[in-house]
Image (cartoon, rainbow, N blue to C red; front, side):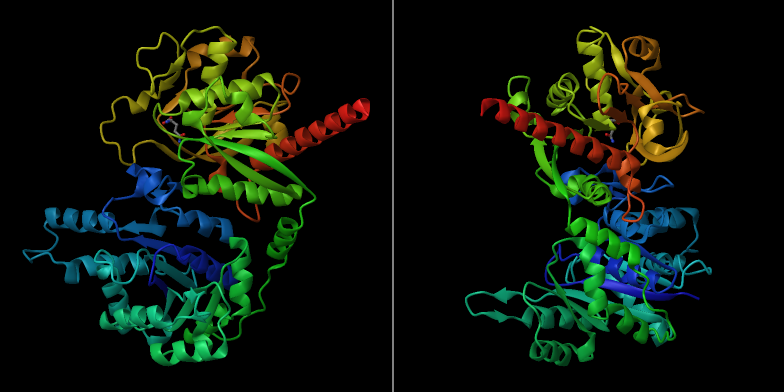
Length: 550
Ligand code: GLN
């Protein structure tokens, strides 16, 4: 039987509950435990698939095609495991399940209520992953902040489980903010006290309090928090702001978050944590040998969380190459053929981001044309790949106003078309081509060189596809489909051969969703390498010019 850890948050949102939960899981894994994490989101959407990225950041897609919260991305990146539909549950999904059961008549004439029916369903989900022997410890992160109306049923479910399960099978960790008042030069514990009191009013008592803070917690502060919040002093954990999220597991190790959790769960005889690879990665991350600047061309760039997995993939790939990757945001909406030269100045490569809808697409096309013509490394993901196909159609094949059916239904040259099975779909939620599909790579291509094999599997989230009617025309003009899905014939990868361009590659799938600290995405690794080579070439040509001038 598994044991259960619940992570709740107080005082404010954005304290990094997901990172603390993932760090704890990482430490438990490093000590030899089988640990997993799940996220409970209190909003009423059934999943985040229909949400605009401005709402809660990117939608993370799992192997089994679930559209989930971006925290699942952190779980996978930290633990190097696959999560699934079962790892993300929203209020919407809970209600949908309960209402469906009610329609089936499963409640035998009873009035269906929040307590017990909704809370029972939440408890089912909380216990689900621990039902067989797959995991020793299941960590459940409860979204939202204590005091939110929406999260009440989840807190009530935790209360019931704290009462129902043996005491040594449940540990509740509460993450709060301990603000530092600069004028008074003091850390303040009152918000934490209030937050824990509010939890107690809901009947849940935290065993461990993790304090997000800008300044170190001294012993007096720790004792004060412990006394007023009724926990042991050692269970008050300091979580200082970190320079990188990948530092947090080591900070939590120093604070003994894992040991104190294991003690509460009455687990003894565990191994020393094996974190050599993690530390090796951190060393490379902290001491890069060079730096490249990558332009991230997208329309959601005001919100960093919208491209979370892409930004993290650059961190992983940068460490492998021992290169610091500086990502510069370029708003595709304000990019035009007139200002593209100025906007691309100083870049060593561009990544054209995924997206939906018309806004910003012409800017993406302008950036791609610049990259193609100036041999600037280019990497297009999903919509970014589709825009590269459109750019090539318009500017190389001469297909005037070629477009994607998504942006222009009446285009004479629909080089990006709607997938056949998508045409009959009316419901928008959860109906894209989602999750892992295999891709066969053509031997001798850039793609084969990058992956080092001819069969791969990557995750997807799209409705539109490369129109195969144009395949030959593109190939004749030099742009080839170097990867396709065998069953459907869908184009997965397009590229220009190395003889034409040092790195010009677009993928219909999302390689960023599978990049982890221990297994960085090959496409990102190669793209950063190409950008570094471009950078070195630029530097050496500048040095040569300066030498001539002197
Ligand atoms: N809007 C495009 C499609 O649905 C691309 C989607 C994406 O970039 N994830 O095919």
